[in-house]
Length: 294
Image (cartoon, rainbow, N blue to C red):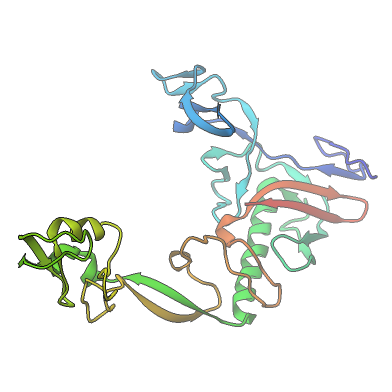
């Protein structure tokens, strides 16, 4: 197993090295609390509690201004002129981290299979830390654009809430009546105030209101109580659409990107999700390996 040498500043004689990403810690609201593990019976969950290391008067914790390892860099949001890891400035962004002017990078996640891409340095000095991250951002931008250009469109159904029904309650569709017959919900016979549904069936007002707390249909004929020409009483309208990538707002409970069959075969995550959190350079073979999280 090959051992990666951690060499900083870079020694050109080294065979390989890890390129770390550090930040100067700037406090935010997240510094004011920490997660505490709570065990209840067989269940385990985490709850936010006040961080005793945080000073609310100046809004700082004990790590303010210190050098800390970055939690990752959002590739799509990376700005060459303001290199940040989330809201914290990247430490030494202008430091040359790869002195070679040409090498290959292995891109594997989230692609169907790994691809090797050649990288050319912007100058004879090689790549600075920020130039390297910026170049990887442009590579992924190209990959995602080409994937959408070459992939087969996906046909899917998208549900949209019916605007006509959304502002109306089932009560708006009931009519008061005098019930002289047996209620089909409670089976009691009595002269009580009743309600007539659009389908014509009658019930005690209290009985049908309790039923409609969880249902939108008549207990007898199962016709929808809400009569709507747009959605037929369903409360939503179903559209059939066609896109290569299903828009985030139309994915329902599944927020992950749908798998596409383009030139790269992207699965699982949008470009916006990609988090660069590892850089490893093999100087001997002129090869950069990266680790992408989400």
